[in-house]
Amino acid sequence: MSYQGNAQKYLRNRISKIVHKNYGTSAGGGPEVTTYFSYDPHGNVQWVVQELPGIGQATVEYQYDLLTSNVKEVILNKGRVDEFYHRYEYDQENRITCARVSSDGIVWDKDVTYNYYKHGPLERAELGEDLVQATDYIYTIRGWLKGINSPDVKAYNSTDLKDGAGNILDGENNGFSPDEFSFVVQYFEGDFSRNSSTVTSTTTNEYYLQGSTDLFNGNIAALTSSIEEEVGNSAYFSNNGWTNANTGHMFTYASSSNNLQFT
Image (cartoon, rainbow, N blue to C red; front, side, top):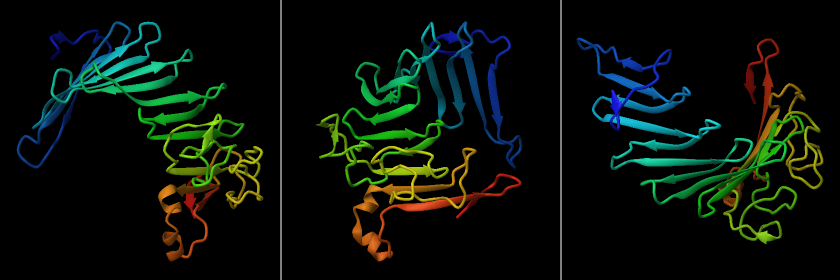
């Protein structure tokens, strides 16, 4: 097998190909799907060719940073009418900061940018070159995900920094569309505390849903969620007899197996 005129390389002690056989009822079975691999001198997959019955070949090419081995570019079906490119940028901590896409490898569109907290976790993802949507991430002091966006997707909260027209970020309208969804995870009462925040885990917070049992092992005790389309549709809630736009779920676990029991 070859790709763009290049034969498979550096195959010793590595997978050369995978054959998936469809053993049907017909004599000899069904068609086979074969996937071929080639590698660079460092052991990174350089290209993949997959032979698909009735479709032909599908290819993926990878390009890496020489020092870090981070994926710099991924090329799908290179040289074909449906070719597509992905390009990635990283910070000094080898975290992805930006992903761009292109249909020709010349004109690129920004697909997403990522911002991180100083201590490492993802803080914010901004989708689209035209500021389509952004999601903000909040964590507990233990590093567990506490929530995405503010649970009040309609009203601006300066502490939780929501997106949307009329909302203010760093003193200016940030230009992003309003948050379309949010959710907050509850582990135990007091797992998160921030002044004036809608994600603070106290019973005085109207968005706080206390689980049936406080859990300190990382399991989720309760979860509240909100979808902007439902929040903006007052008739939807009144017809269903609801007075609050947030929905909540509580979780319990079997003590012997730690299996989830949804309530």
